[in-house]
Length: 543
Ligand code: FAD
Ligand code: SIN
Image (cartoon, rainbow, N blue to C red):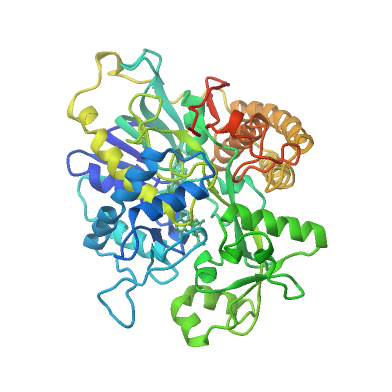
């Protein structure tokens, strides 16, 4: 067991964590912890791109309007306006680091702006159909050359370290974290002046997800255990179009494909979305996913189909090379075949509550990226607004936290407790972990998915309470492992989602409950806010 000290501890190496680290490293020492290799993250798989106003024919007002409209009344207007207005500056920063966004073939001085669901304009900056990979490659190269940044790969943060003594604002103060070195099984105690959670989302709480294995909601669970305020976890976004193929492991077919004219069809060829929304196949995601779910259940079909066969093969291959090749691997030539697709859990609009600076309710704890709930997305995120949010809030948090690193720790936190190994022994029953993991993901999909009801939610609550008891005992009896840490976290996030979903007694955006099918602006046009194990009144957002 060893102890380390740093100015900034950044947990996570997605676009949010890397961007924060680069900015913070200008004036202090940064340690990045990441639980696999640096590349592995949701960011790495982002296809569509980054939404920002980058053309003279577009305007901030229109991007703001689209974001508010997707958010179904729960966006915080000030956050939306400021985030969108900052977009072009953050994009230019990426370009200065060396990110190459795709330009138009007819004029290489103009960006080739993509279109996605809910956007009234072409405004998605993209690098082919592998935007996340391109941005991460560039940022990782810059991070590796930076002598103020140390990276600890294969280290999973277990819990935040808080002081019992009250901080300046009257809240608990976060002074570091414990992390397990997956190679040696040692637990590091890390003391930091500022701790940043950039741990991403929690798609793995669900059986079917577009997210990679790292997305187990660790940041949300750690912040919750440390006493931070959590918001809006009932709003889980399901992406409408994942490839339906037994070997594809929920491979995403980007919304940009629909942006270029692809149409969703039923088995018999019907363009069904036209009946439900004036934007048809390009309606906001909540509408498309709920409609597909409805049609599949009504007809007993396994999937719907995405059709872009009316576009020339050369265009498809050039605009979507990664998607084209991946589909071809599974025997689907998207220029001549329809792609079978289904919805899957994709993005968490809720998370650890933060202000405009990414500061949480706990002193010295910041969040940026998908782990946070900043007020930008409301009840449903507009496509490609999440990478924008990650960039903007990484910037804001790095600016706002500087004063903490300029000074020493308060006198009462000069020493922090080392990890207590307790009397834990090695487990000889790892099957408990994998069984519980499967069970949670399955009942979350069946009972707390795209369409919910009170009965399903109550069932899920009962199940998670039983499992939580078992996991709790197991956690304290046995030596911590990566799998056990992740299981404990998905169980915590699952329990929170269920509680949040039961609390909101209406349907809005991504939360659809058959027992309350209508939106209720009078009573529920507010965030769902959970702190110290109870719900507190959120700010009224419909004026
Ligand atoms: P991530 O990129 O997920 O990074 C989280 C990091 O935290 C990882 O490095 C992980 O290993 C690390 N971590 C987690 N827990 C721990 C722990 N306990 N200890 C140590 N490290 C930990 N959004 C858009 O705006 N545009 C798109 O085109 C787009 N396409 C997408 C396509 C796919 C397939 C997916 C899955 C998502 C897409 N999204 C898109 C959403 C977007 O990619 C994510 O919301 C965003 O990348 C999140 O970035 P992040 O830095 O917050 O988290
Ligand atoms: C996509 O490319 O469809 C994903 C975009 C997003 O999640 O914002």
